Length: 344
Ligand code: SF4
Image (tube, rainbow, N blue to C red; front, side, top):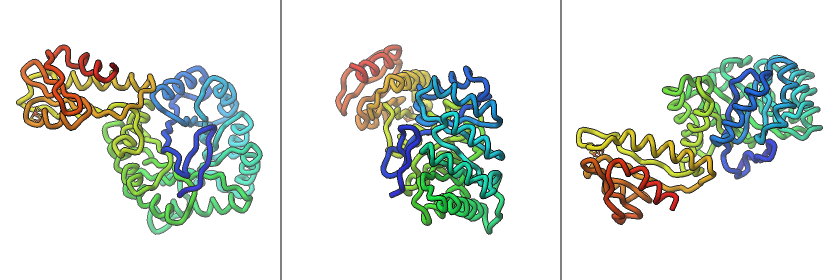
């Protein structure tokens, strides 16, 4: 089992639930927009938030942001170690350092000294795009650079460490995490870096993060998407729920529809999905499976297997609960009737 660290009051590693992270996309100096985005992310299920710290004004903004949010805040630092010092002084709950651009030992030591004093962890966050030591493969280079970095921290008796080894290639990412995991007990932050827009990024992240989680590797995850960060959080929740590692609310099992379908199943599934997401916001953690099936071919079978379900016919459907027929309803009442069973 991995060592456990704490970011604010969220535990990472050592058997703690796999936590969900995201990163704001606002200019961190725009304090009100950043707070607004963090609150939106928190409502959608984000548990740890990271902000980009690119100058001193940003590092100082952390103090005002922290006052208004509930999530632990991570300061993302590159190039200038003094920004890390400033972010810690202003209340950051964790610092991310990139071994590719903050690598001078005396500079790292300054950050470690202050992190130790403030009892906050450091993420050694390596990315394939900013790696300095070139090894045989991208994965080996990332692993080597992280291990060398960790040695500096350990020489200062600092063990409050979390590690990420992200590459934009899914296969290199998986290889790097597997390699590192064999050599180390530090908890792991998983992600595929620069995964792209949602259409491809969710797939790359699901394969990369999912393959590792299935192997028991990974303690916190971030899905990186070029797009709304709320989509990152929803994708992360879906990955964890699909692997049955955590449950965030009802799961919809709906058929793709075909020429046999005689209702507007796309609308029904979409509406139900949106209503279930709202249940999440109300902290519903029911691990229910709701089957929404277009016709009598697989419909009754799937609907019976799920906790509740609907098998549709011509402009209507038959609702099942725990394998038993509850009632026949008209197409326009399907969502309403299913929700009644969900929230009696
Ligand atoms: S359940 Fe029926 S409507 Fe849906 S894909 Fe299968 S055959 Fe088509």
